Length: 153
Image (tube, rainbow, N blue to C red):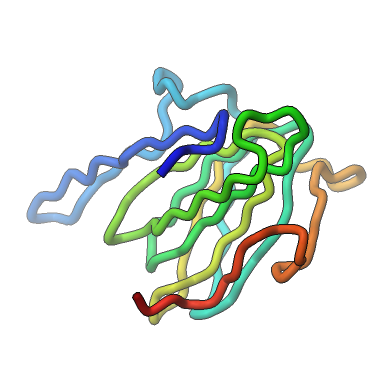
């Protein structure tokens, strides 16, 4: 898959032992790291879609730490070498990844596991309650060439 310009992926290393496991998500010395804004988590129940939105000012760093999520990105940026591209990632317990999503990239996710999915985001900016840096479209907006339907290849 050709990555959208500015999108970066970090394969998360899971370190198991007889007590459980540990996985680092984001380090300040990672190539993917820009700056720290805050950390939050969000969940989705099986089959729930949370899409679409983008930010003008912040980058997001998304991962799924429980369950599985389909995280989808769409590049609608004028002048971008990857304008019109869609990236689709299956992230979670079976594929631990961190996805760096730069500003102006539409993104969203769908819980694809049989249990609730739990995602962590480490955005580069704090959330501004008075003037949120969020610009939304409905999950089924026809201007984004993507269907959230399950495909049985």
